[in-house]
Amino acid sequence: MGFTLIALAMALLVGVLIGCTLSERLLEARTRRQAATQCSLNRQRQELARQWRALESARQEMTR
Image 1: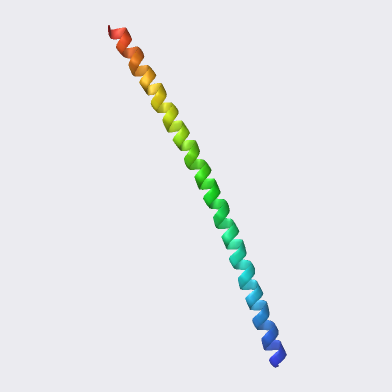
Image 2: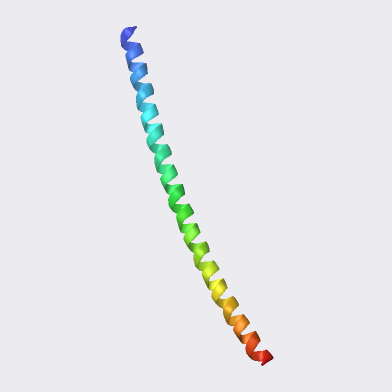
């Protein structure tokens, strides 16, 4: 009976450790995806701002 309880406790502990490790890896992967998405959005925003400035400049040239 005592051996069975020890074995169950160890199995539970191993399961918790594996679960924590998997959760940590999934969180790291999510963080990397979010960082990549944020970088992409920042680049798109900068490109849009550049194109907007070029459009405004061309519009001003046309009105002169």
